[in-house]
Image (cartoon, rainbow, N blue to C red):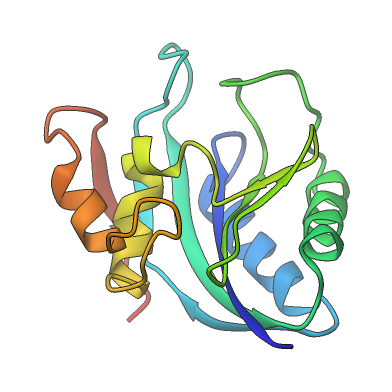
Length: 167
């Protein structure tokens, strides 16, 4: 069965714009995965550890018949191929690819995968680009739209600005 999946992409090491665009290209080449929408690119303030470069972030919509763990593993392979070294939470990274939503599924596979992404509603760098491409999609746990989650987000929490439009 084909599912609509939303994926967040971010980078703050090297040419972060090119890193994000390369990740989108790699995802387009995953068998059984078709990228159907790409948000604009945003420059966003880091969360957690502030003394690092700002991130470039975007969100994509894909259609896939892969199972969630198959898609996750493909994304982890892309991260590794691009040079990602996992050093813990809130650290600089050449690329970060996170599965946000997988249709309306609620998935928890201990220490491997949680969907919806457990902190997406706390991150403007996720909500802003996701709201651009999927404002009316409902969060399967909270039952409200992505646009509504963004409206509830505190205005002064996490700076974000449009970096590069897709048009």
